[in-house]
Image 1 (cartoon, rainbow, N blue to C red):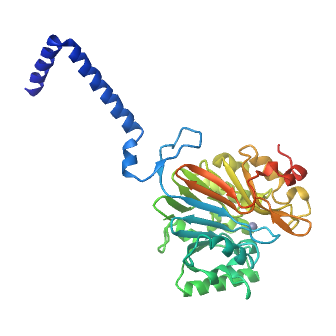
Image 2 (image 1 turned 90 degrees about the vertical axis):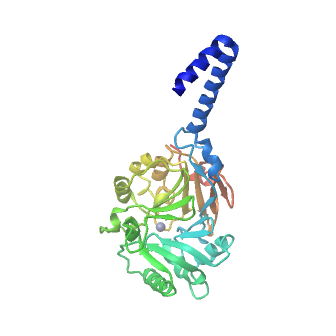
Image 3 (image 1 turned 60 degrees about the horizontal axis):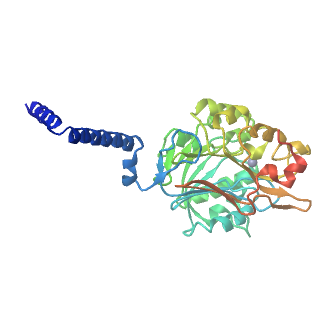
Length: 379
Ligand SMILES: [Zn+2]
């Protein structure tokens, strides 16, 4: 009934005043098209969620994910000529430290950096990727240089489920970890996290916008003679920005990582095993296609090898990674008398406008450095 009445009115108007009729139709079409565009780009959401579009990765997928807040991931120098890892992550009021290498006294260098950000003496999360000295020594510390477990009130410790280690530094780590647990810290293995067992979670919300996901490593529950392959592997995500950290995982572990996890493009990749020729395999790189690569090492140091081409970062690693990006940064450089900063602390900030790299010494990419020009080839 009603629609018949409307039809009659419309016909009447069209006959009586054709110009007004056409104008109304055009206006209705314009309103319809605008509503479609608004809906398509989710512009409504901007009013509801406090954030902005991120669109700086120059591709056309996932660009309308909305994020707010800020994520800082800092790849730290460890204060000596030895290679090691220490990665500090700040998301809102949540502080996370992944590894504390390379020597026991690294705790001092790490403390001096992270105390710029940590004001309450609390680390909400600590991850120890595997049982090697260059990753766990700083958790232990010395009498004169207290370790991370002595310096901070750690809330949650996540570490490697398996190890073959019998070293003193490993036993010291276990002792300090036990003391921290007795002081109230919660301890989970990466496998408990992955399995969501015993109160642990595979995906941890560091803030509303930042997640820490414990990836599956086959060697969380299978034995290997290569300690590096026991490494805890994680993905940190802020909106559509992804940071992949695989500890010292090597080729074999990387192949399993690709096989068992649904990996895809990442924005930032911490070079596997300090940029060793045994890590950063084509199998992994072709899947993660990284934009920015951070290498935690003392470039050109002969700590592990006499072959100059295999010193970190190794020529083979560079020959593989160069197909994906030249945005490669290195923390430290070996000198005749010791060490100096290469890029220094590599500080990566992800916020509503995208990703920014700011290093404490300089922002020169690896292939433009004097060390690279003298010692490596870009091929
Ligand atoms: Zn290492």
